[in-house]
Length: 201
Image 1 (cartoon, helix red, strand yellow):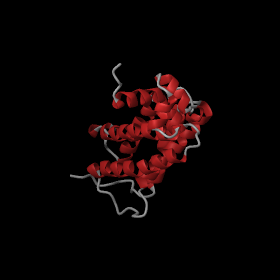
Image 2 (tube, rainbow, N blue to C red):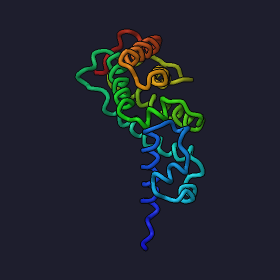
Image 3 (cartoon, rainbow, N blue to C red):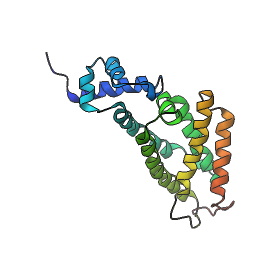
Image 4 (tube, rainbow, N blue to C red):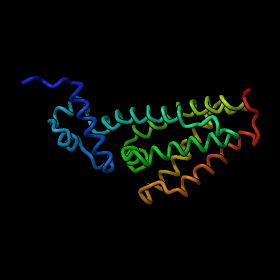
């Protein structure tokens, strides 16, 4: 019998984990659950991943790439009249992604005990914040901003807190809470960005 290539086996494991994490909290998933879903021996899964946390962390790398891709396409040039338009379009794009991706809802918005995932998410927010800052600089001349923090990363994190709180309470991101996240992030960014920013010529 021909041996299955390692790459194919890893793909089956990841697909099984995605399927399970899309259905329930990651706290309720074990390596044995993944092995059963993938029709692979648990020992084989353990050979590649020491625990479920390591496997979920690997899945998050794909999610982080999705986030970066979302930012590349979030802003419609023709709709940018004011800097708040950028904030609004970015947050709406992320909300749409959350709503359409149960995996991310359960891992990033739901409650779990994995500190490594929270740390990886926070680190990725720093990268996304720089990407958001670059987007703003495409359209507007920004004032001097704090050097010890990235205000755009913090805005992303604040919005996620609102989404997470609402998701944990009702199992979804309600339209009114998506609206509130935009209001809150606009107010925070507005403490650093003047109401009227000069456009990049």
